[in-house]
Length: 205
Image 1 (cartoon, one colour):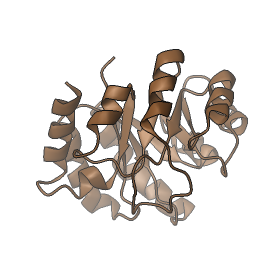
Image 2 (tube, rainbow, N blue to C red):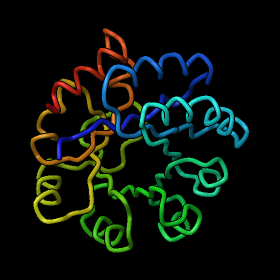
Image 3 (tube, rainbow, N blue to C red):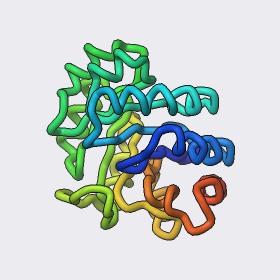
Image 4 (cartoon, one colour):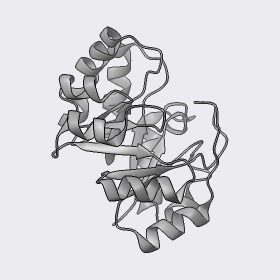
């Protein structure tokens, strides 16, 4: 299976203005998932953002995933939720989302955490950060060997995350990542997000 793009929203956005940028990005190529990640937003702000952006993602065939909040993801009708090790547990997330929606789990650089998540039934595990990133404070770093090991021996899909750009992505694709989680590497691309999505598609091909 070819690697695919897993977009993460900017840390701050104005939903209506961002909707236009998102539409252009999703029209430009294949995007597997869009994660709404607004750490400082209130529930009302998250709901407004989801109302504006989820229909755009779903029309494009892109899964709409909410970060951190299984309760809200279930209530808003999101396609999935992504939980970190400090957020709701996998079991809480699965209980909220049901069997038919996506639950992904941050596993940092830990084989044990990834094993546990995969055994429990996570739809994907996420390793990182692979590179320095300004999106969040990096407490854990992961290496390409971890990706290679997981891809060789495990069937649960793996997402690589953390500071990924067009310039540094190739080794992660070659190592067997199923998805690359990218934020500023798309939204801040010099030629614009649509050009970045096209370029990632070309890299994956």
